[in-house]
Image (cartoon, rainbow, N blue to C red; front, side, top):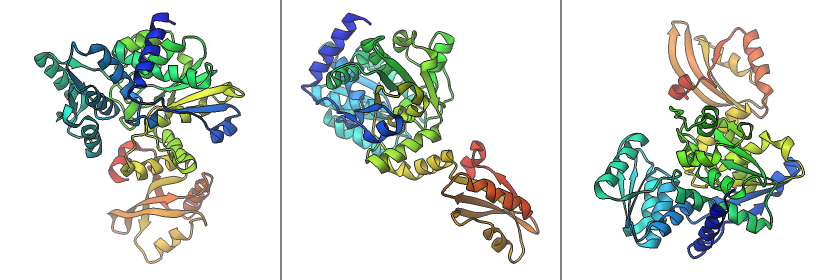
Length: 410
């Protein structure tokens, strides 16, 4: 742990108080009871831009102004909003490059935070194209490219999360759980706390950038990645962030399936009324991976963001049910005769509900292929249903976990 870094993070935190208050550190009784520990949530989803990203943007700008008056970033999400917010605060110009495919809601929020101080440029179908355009613009215009994570000032700014945790708790917690994308938050937190506590770093299975970097001794491109957990879907850990994380224990890195993360999103919304984006729910879902280690301990989960588009809610609910084994999709070969459908319906249990029924095609003169979606209230109901289908002579294919096929028909 570097004393200079500590002092820098503390100074950055104090300076932030002129712009926004500390985000709450709240004990969660529901999670504490479940895991037999004192579970606190560091609510970065309650910052002015609903994520911690404005911290790094603030710290970088306060140090680089007046040498730089134009700041550029490439982002389709939280970093763009943080940069926009701070450009408006400092009264400097911001040029924010976003992919053409960025949802309108994110574009509008970025413009709202930045106002007249920013310009949004939609470039490229993929982020790599957007990034290249942003960097080319910087080279031509002499503007400062503000990385979302691989920047020393940004890392120091993100460390303010750790400063606030220690201040609010009155001590260092026993264990902290951190979501990882490019590594800015986790690098800053580790650099500030050092070895004073235990760590768990959480990544989505579809973007294991920290795990790959530790395995290979250097940042490693893990493309192609799954972008569902967009706030943590980074193909390559930053070089500067890796320098602060390279001594992390590989056993402290956990990977969670994207569908599994949806379970915590739904639970926190329904039980606690807390709106979290997928990356923001990573640390909470990871509690299940360290349950034996944290009993009786004080644990902080950083809920890194709450920029959730509610148009995604049906997909998130379905993915959560799919992970929990409460919904399945299969293609049924249904005989084309009177009473065949009635025979099938008679095999359903009292808690089995058809959520999707669609004729796909006639595979033969006497048979038709049907896409069936069934939701139930207990995972154990499906084996009984499939046994009944087998005994009745129905032919079917379970496509629930066939990602290639499911993306076309579900």
